[in-house]
Image 1 (cartoon, rainbow, N blue to C red):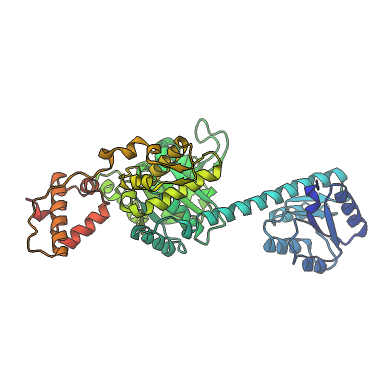
Image 2 (image 1 turned 120 degrees about the horizontal axis):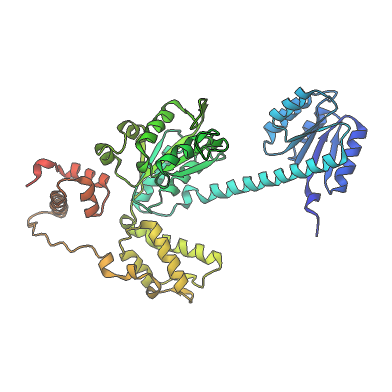
Length: 466
């Protein structure tokens, strides 16, 4: 079997023939291939083909090693660069490291020091290649074309992502739990010009009031009892990329005030620190709560609400996109089959029919869990209804409550009859909930925005009560 080191191509800019031969010989004993270039111009021409590793003498007859370092980093920012110098100047080394050099060697070059430096640089190179591959795979995974759903609601979500992605405006993603809000956030990031930068997520509901500020903004050593060292927060980790604040509606009020300031000023201070830290971060928020109602209840700041409510993407619940269920089910089935852990390769039409009848209070997440459970129960090639969870097969869980309105629709055409029926149904739900739109929307099985839209279209207001 071939040594993987033999595939490592190293370019070395060095005008001293003896030093060039020495490095080439030592590298060869370790299985590396080194090509030596005596001038900066020859080295730059060789950069047309991307190397795995670069070695640079800082003092060449026709070029500055620091200039070659800068050009190499611009051309290939992920390729490690080791600098070598006979100078005793500490400034040269400092400038090289600040310029992006991975390591430095002093002449005459020590055999063992060179071997270690090359090994470390090759390791970094491999990690960079793996990271580049991972980012490419993630970008492919979260491509808009891979977002499942052809119903109008999902088509609208995709269109809004296309409109929002190129911009840096804060986005608010709304929807019930389990609808796929994080998937939308990732699609936004991987469709934007920040795609090569970090995507960092924070679940605001999972952190206590005492922990969330340290998690978001970081802390200085000694800021509190367990702060034994400085820690970078999520904002710093996401610099240049996107920060996803999931369940922002559960963020404590004191933290909301600091969040508002960060969004306005684009800087913050670590907990226990005085230095202002500036960041370039695109903030994406998500919530399953009605933030307008939270503002009225004084549990969410009005100024922060208007700051994050610039561009809203509402993810529809699964019960409003029943036509997407077969495609989603087959997608989850394919994921399970790919793992090699299950026998099931397909799902029967009768099982799909059962899935389409269920109301899915847990939305897409519940559907995924139901399919995983079915795959565990199925020891055949095709999932049947009996393999589905009892909750899905329970008629009482999936059947919509019977409605027997005595509204007289005699003499009305179809459009007028539907409007009359909707008006009666909406008014009844609102009166039952004392005109609380959020509760009425839940009872009607729609979102608050859809209810408000229909109320506006039908001219329904509180004066119609009674």
